[in-house]
Image (cartoon, rainbow, N blue to C red; front, side):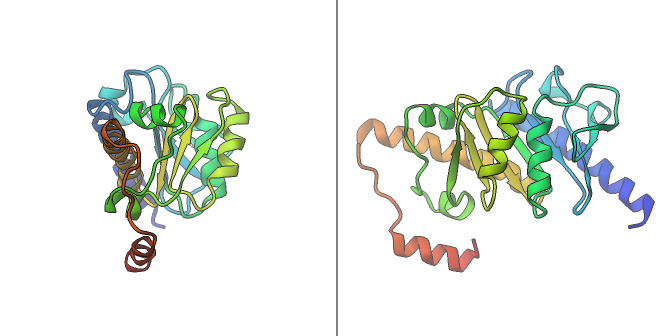
Length: 217
């Protein structure tokens, strides 16, 4: 790839990471210092990630850090997110993934803690989320958590980290953002429905199969 073109693509990625971080903050899916986003140019063995200890609602491109797939800092002056090992693990395991979004979705996380799985209650959830895996508890920022994510990420678009938050992955940043936002949307809908009815109507299995064929999911 032309070096100038590659640089332009990376600058666009960095700007989009900052925009997404602000949107997630405005929606209450990340806190002032919590949550992280990363992205890479398709096929690259390095990625840009948000910094640790910096207000997430007003990030700028120069705040981001470039690291390789071993988590070693290649560019940037700030400290990369404590969850860099998770992002690196996903990129190593999934050549099809070019963006990772980690949020602290309150309702999704709460339902998981209550032992309530996210279910296909809307057409959107059936198309976007597929099966949502739950990753057992491990301390944030540790290789143990990264290894657990690595064991659950194969074929998944969304993960729930027990007692922690969620992860959405995608071919690009918009797809990964859509995953975490859809997770919370479905979780809120499911929570409200459960207030009034114990057994929630699900999309019929035959229609789930049809959706998979129609949307190639």
